[in-house]
Image (cartoon, rainbow, N blue to C red):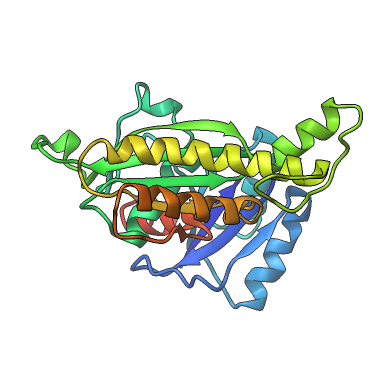
Length: 273
């Protein structure tokens, strides 16, 4: 059994995969770095005895060392994955592949592994501390082994996540304060105005990348969303996406939500390394 650990800026997400890469989706743990000691009783509660751990991290070296020390205490070997680890599903098209965030790389692998839409572009929007919007397209016309992956990562954007936008307004304006309001077409109170503006900004950034992927003329892109900030922009995103497809006279497709794409990517990579 492979233990899977995604060490993010705010939380650690933990799951496991069987030897064939199968991952029980219902069995996962999300904790803060301060709650790391909860990992051991969680393993015991579910009778899990990992043979090794696959990890990806965007956190500080101090948090990584804490995780490594805990795994060492139970004699669990570790393998840290990054964006330079090749994957049969995806080729890294970043200018300098090693600079691509490991979480973005593994998340897009997880999306491709779960969604299996390798015949058309895929746009993955992750609403975390930062919002990242990454795009992969079918990797056509490549015959050399270096580029023999099913899809090609062609780039993405980064912007502050929904909660970070809220916090920025609360911390840097004198009278707006904090709090989440209802979204509306024409907000008539400040809380609603802020929530509507943030949701519109997030959805607009995602639709920009979707439109660019559509312009590749490789088929209607699949849109997959994830991350803890999804609930804050879900309504706006779904409405804006539906309107976009109607304007282009496309058969309407839903926004797919994937709870833990990084863990799904680690599960897939556990069969490769």
